[in-house]
Length: 454
Ligand code: TRP
View (cartoon, rainbow, N blue to C red):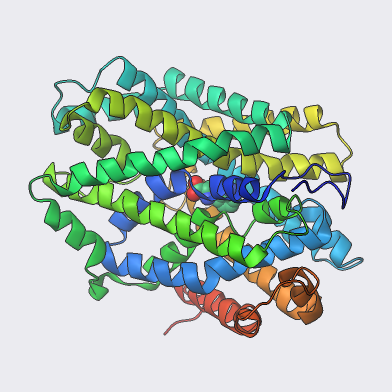
């Protein structure tokens, strides 16, 4: 059904379009690159368990809250707050989201650029005949370079800008519908190869057998940050998308389906990576490069690995692209609606300025690798600051805004589509966003930053 009746703004054309675009935003490098590297550094199983708890307790409710705010506000992240709370400072939450979008896209485009390099390396068959140590070495040589990684990053930003410029329905919706299911199938194939490798069981144990001695408040914060990052919540991307969702869409169903798909892909990525990590004698806490070192090893060990590697890295790049467009869209929608720019100008200014910052993230693996603040590189700081600090604060303020400021009537209206849908979990949802989610986020935050000591 077409959703053109409620405003003149661009909107998603179908129910499946909504799910495809939102899932496209959620599923990306966060699942396939970030989840394994953070889980690997945070000790595995116990981290995964806490992460799953946060998805359920905080992730799904916050996603739903963002949809409600966006569809109600019919504006970009900043404008929706301004419209729903006129004269109040809530729009600052939107502004914080726009800053977070700059940080996220700056470092995300570095890794997205790596996926393009790996498409090339797959096509030129350059993993062929290399052992685990050699594959690691060639990754490190590429990563620490200057020209190539920056060029790939800029190409990726260009692609993102091009899709964002071409508009919501044509650009975002069409590209996600076919490719996401294909990615899912390919990951399953790779999981099967991974778990049949010799010594695979050690990896599965690492991922699923919780060792609670590994848990610190820092790890809990990492789990919260990863849950938020993976679901694209806490910075208004889903407020912006929510504003494009039609009035007849069942928001709760969409939030649950998208979260399920996103979490399934993250867990499958873990099943694909960790058995291989142990089987090839690598270490789970390898860091940012983990999947780029492990995956070529898997392709080397499988029949048809040459073709699978090409398809996989193409799909990974596409998954990254459907995420980057949702981040850039936050900035562009803000520039267009609040600063009254044309869509073209907004896209160019947004993507060029983000790319300029992004280059420093890419260089922090090479020329700037010794430049550290709080023992982190520029890339490390952007990654940590956005996922673990800005997104949890954003998520906290979003649920407070909906639960305590907008209140029950708006929630009931939006969840029931003005009385046409039944919502059995309404009471639970309101209880979570008013009490459980804000208290949980605040606690994790205060303990892990040492503001409060146990
Ligand atoms: N969720 C995406 C991923 O997992 C990244 C992403 C897209 C994102 N939009 C976002 C993260 C908004 C935080 C906020 O790759």
